[in-house]
Length: 234
Image 1: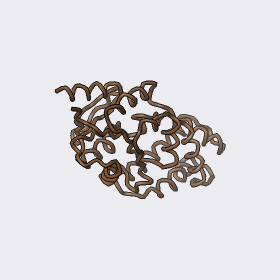
Image 2: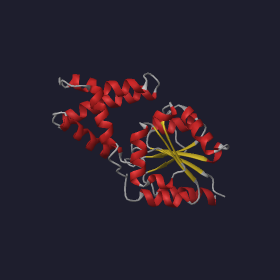
Image 3: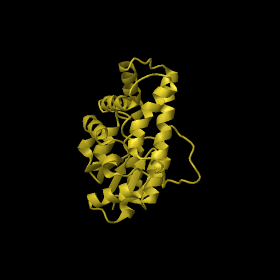
Image 4: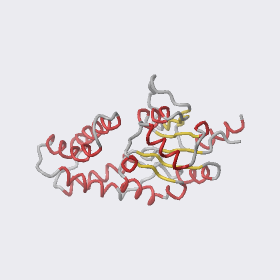
């Protein structure tokens, strides 16, 4: 019997290539507002955005503050005039149009796994953006459901989003649920907080953290079905 009959996936930089999508959407946004998207300017935005997301995941700020402030702070940092809130709206609209996959193998892996397990996405982000990207990428075809932090009113690593997802999926025995994601502090810690086994997707072979220990680690998505087959035969 399969060890896991429910697999929860992170979206960004696990199934969807967020880095590629962000780069395109950010460049389109900056150009639209008359700002040159050079490397230094892009890095300025990313530094501000990543710090706000860290604060959000720790529960230190609300989602509205992130949306209202990231481009406002960015414009101030580069000494440019403009409406940061309006800029954020434009950026999110552009982001939703980029459904880049992490690789050509993603859909094949999901197709194989969907034959033996219930699949769902648990993602931090914005409902309209994430659902459109997941749908247009083809990922949605293999998912029982999608749980986005904006709609669930909780961000990973808060166990609330996992509890709500498992309730909606009708899953009671958490021993048979696996959380797969690239983020140690969000996906893996979130899975631990919810009492789930976890699989760290680590394609860049990044160093781990002694305080966050995933149950498994893989470096490519095709390793996941192979791992599950081995576990089922043990």
